[in-house]
Image (cartoon, rainbow, N blue to C red):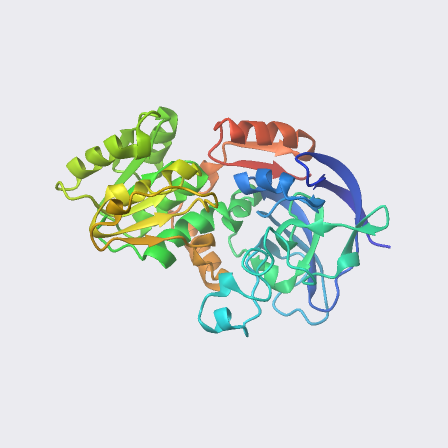
Length: 372
């Protein structure tokens, strides 16, 4: 008999319910985690409509309950952060250093929307005796989850709360990694951040850690811009929602950057029509980074690429969990990275609807589900 607990399960058609599930003991290479907190992001909302039942959630932190016999470096009682960017270490992309694009284990690069067939044993988690899949192979919005050992990283911080640890799993890693790993922002450079939600705020923090000279935050919400200043923005621009392509805001950016445009610009709005907007913000030979993961058709004025501009579309901040998570934890310990301050609200599992609603209305920098 396994552990009986509750989880949020989507029907794949746009809705979810809180259901009773049973989670089995781990196989040789697996870890059973008692969840303590699960961060929410827009991808979780998107996963409600992926066409298949799933335990939702892909950000989380908890405590190791049990480990399989082949698992090393983890013992029951360890605090851990969940990581969905598992990798095999042997495929073409892993050998190229692109662990986040693993052709075998990545639930995005290898398996499409949120699940890699065969990566976790199917009867590990069941509902009414039938197997139920886990979003991104981890399904964090559950009281317990069973995952591969590669899906957890030990949290060595003694002062970090579980809600703060949970948001490292995606929102923090995506923002921080887009700056540090993907764009490789240089010290003294100028950075523009379009959209100052959870990911945007962590791009601001990453730019600050990279010692950028000017960090310019652009948003239509003055409250979000106030938060941007708190997290490290040196300048803010209140954009007009009717500013097509943010071209007027781009002119203000140029005025702040010697008339030529910023060195780097990051798009974090999740608005498809703004997919090309960072190109308008950067100078010739500047770098534009599309962080939102826009997957719709958009029309781009190719003159925005003139001249020699680089456009990047990184996945998950090019995450290397065994390297990046410890670095993020150390930045937190040093006071260079704010995490606790990013948690606007916490919610019990029974208030998940409210948490989604607050997120979609832009009320939270980050909302987190907490488990007793």
